[in-house]
Amino acid sequence: MANTTVGGAKAIHGQNPQYLVETVIRNRIYEANYWKEHCFALTAESLIDKAIELKYIGGVYGNQRPTEFLCLLLKLLQIQPEKEILIEYMQADEFKYLRALAAIYVRMTFRAVEVYELLEPLLKDYRKLRYRDMGGYRLTFIDEFADSLLSEERVCDIIMPRLPKRQVLEENGDIGPRKSRLLDALEGRSDTGSDRARSRSRSQSRSVSRSRNSSQDRGRSRSASPAGSRYVSPSPSHSRSRSRSRSQSVGATSFRSRSRSISPDRMET
Image (cartoon, rainbow, N blue to C red; front, side):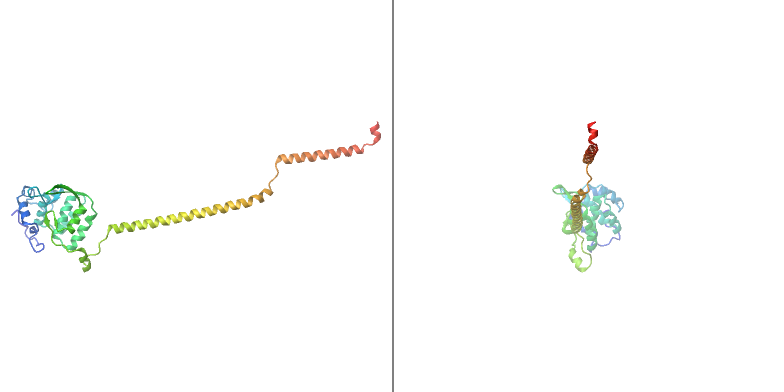
């Protein structure tokens, strides 16, 4: 009973959901200690705690031993939670291994259009993931894992169901064109570049107008300087010397006139 699919489960791709995992790997999962000790009687709610405790993703390692990630994936296929619950798993940004588990389940069980709509946003998630396989541990990222789910035939040692190409779905009108982040970034750079060019042209025009105004002011000041020099008042030293010379000349003429007016008789006495 512990290894059977929940009653009332829907067939996925025309077969039992658990059969999406190959028979050899599925039997090894049933024999694993983690499956027997931790995956018994798990529900869609209690499985979240187990997914949060994951430290790595992957398929089989060592002596063909399944990872805990594969055990929880098979448990999801067995209990078959509702789509709303899987979407909530995908939106849990703080739990990256729960998101990776939900992503591979969506890839295996959802329709092609839903797969592209739900997995393409993960291409913007650049957080690190530990991946364990026959060669040991290695480092990967959530965006690389999502890209492998959309493009590769085998992920985590499990054969993925056939997925039609996105171009075919676009031609049939089932899905809209994909929005490229690189194109948006280039358009944003072009807008900023045009703004910078506009600001530079404005600053250059302002500097040219300022230089023209300053040159005109200088020309006006130079042309006004000779006319103004005509009306410069004489210095006080020059005015004083001129007044003294005038007084001396006046005194000399008066003295001469007085000496002429004296009669010779007076001079003899």
